[in-house]
Each structure stands twice: as structure tokens, then as C-alpha cells.
Length: 329
Image (tube, rainbow, N blue to C red; front, side, top):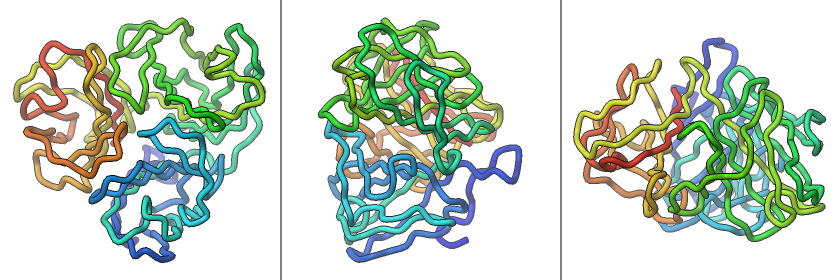
């Protein structure tokens, strides 16, 4: 299978879902294989240099790039990710994805070609992996000032919805009710603490938006990534840190990838840890989704256990503070 022959499959072995691949760029056209499936979302980061995170999905199409660390509207880069392939993807020579540097690509399988969804007040185009709790949703705002609904295609209430305005310079909104049961908002490109949201929780068919100039601006396009926990596959959750070694988060699987953020106080970034960049027992290598910085090493780290993960110290585990996480098997 090439670069990384181990990728995650759900309980149904016919449904590959997620894989992390590492590669070295060549500043020319390059095909990345060994993903194990045709990805629908590819999130690429230059590990060695300060370049933006590049997110490309099959719903918007190849060459359409957004940046998790920036408020920029969508870019079209003809030399970025140029195609989604049956076992990976192809790249041009854009330094953000394929300079003479080391890169990581986190790859998700959604539902392939998007289909029309009319469950909400606002029609959407959806690529949904129902079995594994992940969908990509694109919609166009209708400008209504009242709360509107958008279909997500999962059949189960999403626990985290990440939304980006594609046509305007605007923050990445992250909505979740996993922290305290009511809807909160965070920003993927910022280190802010969580704030209470006036939105109501999603349902099994729709999530809810409002704002004529934010997430529902008339005739403007938006992309959303929706996630919910699936037994043995993934978990959206929260915990209160101890600041000390031995703090364990129990799951029903061994994680391969985690994104986590302190939510109760400001100043912490969205740290991403995986088992391909960090192969030691205690994983210390991280990238922040909210900055363009190169890969860094934490003072303490995280051990991935067969039934969850354990902190070896205060890194990503601030004493007395609430943190959110999304972990994948």
C-alpha cells in the first residue's frame, strides 16, 4: 500500500475511514499513494516550515483551498492538490503542500460525490459517511435573520460542527454542546475560550445557523465539517485537566489521531497529535491548527493506550481547566 500501509477501518471492514500519511515534497508534480481509499477531505501541513494548513475537500473540488489558521476566503490554487485519486491524491508544486519539505496529510473518507439534501430550511450538498460519523456540507446562505436549519446527512446528531465562510474573510466557527450540554462556540483559527451560543443543538437531520452577516449571509457559500462519536471509531468529548502525569481519558479504542483544545480559559491552541509523526510511546510532536508554525515538541506528551490516552504531564492537560477533544481510532 505504499507510504503508510496501516489505515483505519470501521467495524465494517469494507469502509475505510481515516489515515495519516507522511511524505517528502519534491517541488514538482507528485502523486501520494498508500492512503487506502479515495479521500474526501485532505488536511495538509508543512511540518518543517511555517506554512498555512491546507484543507481541500471533494465537495468544493480539487484546487479549492481553505486554511485552518487563517480567516482568508477560499483560494483557487491550480498547483495545490490537483486531484483526489483512488488510493490518495495528486499535487502540484505549491510550497504549502509540495515544496522541498516534510509534510503530513490527514485524510478522511466521507461519502464520495455530494448529493442534494433538503432536510433543512436551506438546501445543502452533502457527502456523508454515515457509518463513521462524518459529513461534509456545503450551503448557500439565504440572508434570514432568524435561526435557519441545514441538513447534514448523518442520521445522528453531530457533536461538533466546524463552519467556514468561503466567500469572505471570516473566522472558523466551531459549535458543540459536548462541554456542558448547551451550545458553545469556539474558533478554529483562534485561542479564545469557549463562549455561550444562542444557537440550539443540532438534531439527527439538521444543524442550526443564524446571522445575516456571519453564517447565513445572502448568496454567500459556506462549508461545514460535521462529526459525531461512533463506538470503536471516534469520540468527541471533554475533560477537566489535572496538570499532572497519569490523567487518563478512557475510550473504547486506541486512538491514532487527536485534536484537543483548552476551552475554559483563553490562550491555548488546537493541538493535533498523531501516531505517524510521533512513534515513541509518549507522543510529544504536535501541530497547532490555529497557527502556520512548523511542528514542535511539547514538554510532556500523550500515551495512546489500547483503551484511550494518558497524559504524561501538564501539556494539553492544564490543571482545573476544561478541554475538548476529537479522537479517531
